[in-house]
Length: 189
Image (cartoon, rainbow, N blue to C red; front, side, top):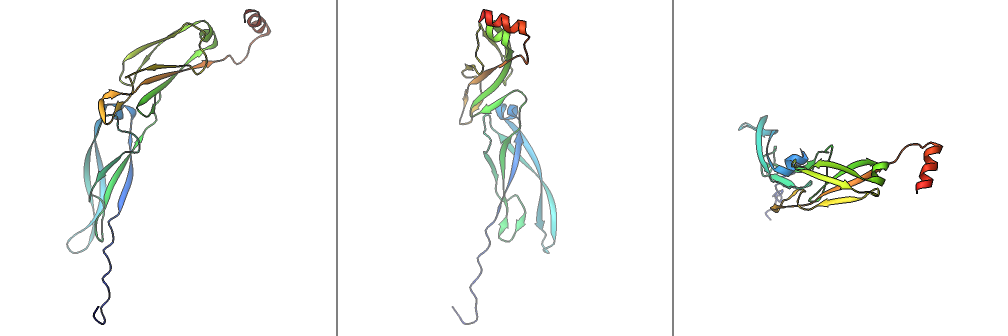
């Protein structure tokens, strides 16, 4: 190395920014197109900082799982060494009726103790609106599950295939019983 010269500093590596992308279970079921407006810092030719708006479009394929990344190269802030990459990380919004479990969709229904012992019938809609008849002739134990193959989420790598729809039965027990009710139950059971 010649006298008086210093080694050149390496150019800093471009950073990656991660942001959550919140999607509903229905959007993850059907697939959807999303547009995201981002603000990014850039520099004009004089070196003056400015903020630009940019619209990013992305296709969410059916069955995509939480934690999946949708990557955009060089769309973020300008910094020494280049422009930041931006990764959106899929995050699933809570659903009022369903819960995703891998490729399966789970739901819970409640029946009362009398129904659990003597029989019950219900109809429940799947994530895509198909009506599924459910019934039990009694007795039905708390936590019993019914499985409906092929009515869950699409498999992201094989969209023609689907997981299962699983319905859990919760038995709602009475909060109190009279002495007479207790005596009759002891007699019957």
